[in-house]
Image (cartoon, rainbow, N blue to C red):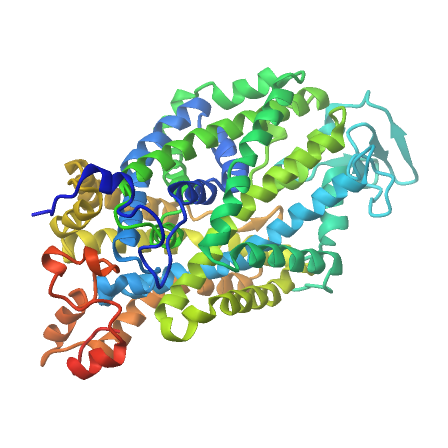
Length: 629
């Protein structure tokens, strides 16, 4: 039976003021948590991934599988992780005292997030670079013309194209053919052909990105030297992250009041400007008009399902970490419905800003929409800047756009860095908890130096392959493990009782159905489609060498391999029993300190268990051979 509390107890989060958890601390207010979740869930993929997926997979028709998977997979996983973290008030690793046999999943989360924060801050570095370039280039943007020192003879500014033959190159004005305008927006380069030679035509924005920002080399085997401008800005970005996280959630929880809300203001301004541009209506038609026949394609459904993991962030450990700082009676069910809805609405809203501008660019160049669309960073650092350069008061709109991208990037990075720090600090609380500020500093410094290779001329090849490989497989496997543990090992009835202890009522049976059957089946479908499609990894037209792919896949599999490896580790260091089977069974049972971290909430079946604040050495003395850590 669930012990009854007054309605006010749940509405106030179980405490009128102050921190319930004196050791780890709590959010200062409920909005700190909500805004942190919204900021985390609404990341760069909402800008550069969702609108393009929507366009390429049937326009408005793509919203049907996306919203279906949001309800059947995204929300259930979101609720599972938030409830899991809030109940035990532990980080991604120590939370798995619920089932030590699968503790490796917690390490898998930390590995994925730890690798991601290294290259994610490099992307934030690029954003800072573009912001400074926009700020210092008034009245025009540096990627608007082809008369800069980094430009080549192949440059075409879209205001002016270059017609090249063997002996000479002549400028021709805007009255040029569509072949000249048909530049590399789709990750391919077209050629201007003379009698004896061919020259690739590249936009001014593309050359600014490749030659001025990246100083890109010919492949991952030729990294070149460090670009000190990028290295300096990478240091600046890590300093900003540290200053915002130096006091943990107490500092980041206040910063998100700006970083989580400012993007909505900027997006709204960009939408107002975008929809008033000529050609915007055509862009929005491509974005919204359904292509119903594409719903028959399995790729459309797999793309929609995969996007859920990049939109909401389950399996990364961030949701679990943020929820672990909630007060015990926070209504995690309400939050787990609200945030995914806000996230989906924001993804659609961002698409309006993107496609209204791309529609303008298509009309202005005479190209069809599909030839100016590019997914990923190319949309943010090439196509959108090219469009902004053609709008009156271009530096103003560019500054606003990159401010928005910067705040969006910071929100996600806050949560991921805090997730890694909390995972390790909670594993060694007696050593690190009082020194958490120094530990956060150490993480930031370490990640800075690990990110330096990505500031070289060939660094973007490393970033691209990491971004391509790290998240997919590990995220799906960890999500499956979570469902399996709470359904088949811990038991959904037990988990429901835990949730009821927090929110004062049992959730609907709907969540049980999803966790037990629907959500795992969707994840299995995604995994099958990943192997069936098996798309090659290409950076534009560049194919990675075999050695780079092997290293990339080894890194990608690390978050999966750690799960069975840690099973073996746990078997030898903490299992109990005389036979192999008995020792394995002992690892599936929660440890004696599993449950609410705050003593006053350890009621019901947790009333006679060991309180988590009891010193580890005292536990060892009182319970020799205890599996508790």
